[in-house]
Length: 368
Ligand code: PLP
Image 1: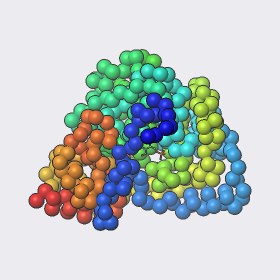
Image 2: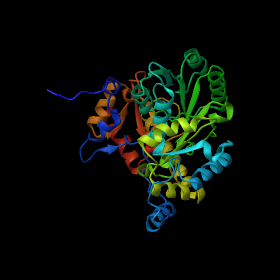
Image 3: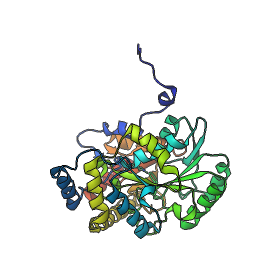
């Protein structure tokens, strides 16, 4: 018998369905389950980290992050996102994950409703629950985009609305019109919008639109993780209007102190340095998306071509999902991302073209 006791808030949270899958499949498995770039961190970023180590920049940094990095993030937000902010409106975090955690801890009171799409990124519901809030899914339309009019019906009285475009797990990119409408509607009703933009650079047709352009109560969450193939470095940030940062800082300084100093210098090189590696990664993801999409639609699957991130959310039925995983095509069942898409599975194309072709071939064999 287990003699240890746990807080109800945490007991109610399930382990991520994705992590469990990492152990699935034999040596011959083709892993399309992983949500991280398969590229290496660009060299100039690694060199900046090595220089920081050599030069002894290895102590605590200011809790909010080194000022050079916060300035560089403000420049980036102005250049790429048409957002104006000051360095004191930026908090550097241990990845986008910590930024999301801080927002929930600082803003959500017991019982507060936290909205996000279902299917959606696994952390939103878990972090809302850990903060004592009530996670609440917002459904998608048949094209896997937010149905703005239906979403509005849930907004009144909620504490937070988490937007994620480009989206995990669907790869959907929301239009400027939808983002503007949702932000204006939510902010008018005192609902804070959290805009998770970690996949902003991986969009293949449309343009990325930052939600903070459309309201004065929008917190932008982002990270170096996906953009610069830096998931293990654990560095991200949030940008927040007005007086949010000191409250977030209360949680951050006691729980984390600061993001890793070495990673902060690496991120500084990432945001200020050569952006060509990002363009190359985007081009490669686009080619892989087309390869996988053509392969899967060629097998008869019918779904819209995803516009961003490095995921494809495919309607294929639970039986086939199970058979595919048993046959070593590791994909993530839709139920890992909420309750509303049990017939779908997420394919990540952050893997080689060869693996994608083999996976399509193996699925074809299974389908006879
Ligand atoms: N937001 C979304 C939508 C993600 O998919 C992920 C990672 O998979 C994160 C945030 C967290 O990113 P990080 O590694 O920066 O914590």
